[in-house]
Every structure is written in C-alpha cells, then in structure tokens.
Amino acid sequence: MSIIPVSPNSYKTTLNTQNNLFFNSPLVGNGTGRNMGIDFTLERYLNKGLYFLLSASIFDSKYTANDGVERNTRFNKNYIFNATIGKEWQMGKNDDNLLSANLHLIIMGVIE
Image (tube, rainbow, N blue to C red; front, side, top):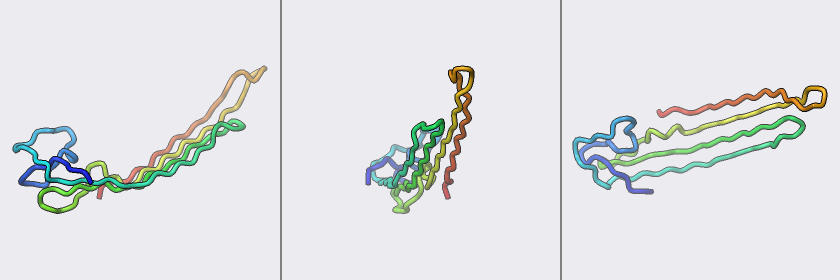
C-alpha cells in the first residue's frame, strides 16, 4: 500500500487524470493505492533462423479515496499478452543476404 493524493471532498485523484491536472481544491494525502501482479516470459533466441518472445502480465491496480470506496485506477487493464515471432532466411550466392518475416501481437484488457 502507498499513500496517494486525493481530493478531500470527492473520489478524484491524480491516478485517474489523463490530460487535465487541475483540481478546484488542494489535494490531501489520505488516499491509498496498491498494485499487484505477476509476469511470465518465454523466449527462444535466434536458432536456425527462428526466434520468439512470449510474455504475459496479469495485474490489479486499485486506489481508495476519502469516501472509503476501492476503485480501479486508469492503469488497471487486468492483463497484457505480447507475442513476437520471426523467421530469417539466408539468401544470395554466398548466403550474405537475409530475408526475414516478423509478427508482433498485443492483447490488452480494458477497465471494467
């Protein structure tokens, strides 16, 4: 848990502002926030022209304002999955040229 600045009379905090950092009242350090999660990674280095990198993050990011209600922060996407895979082929008379194909995929959760 960490202490975060919150508006004294509402649920607003700097954790949920995106473009506007203006508040009508001074912020107080009465809020709390927590982040927890786990990351997994699987990697194959370039071998016989093939490589891949797979990663997954599963996490939860919440804050509690002065009203005592726990809410999602704007960063709480719950999960992110990344996959990168590629293949290289040596070409040319002396195998000194490369042709490669690569793919990158990202799947991200949304705030409920």
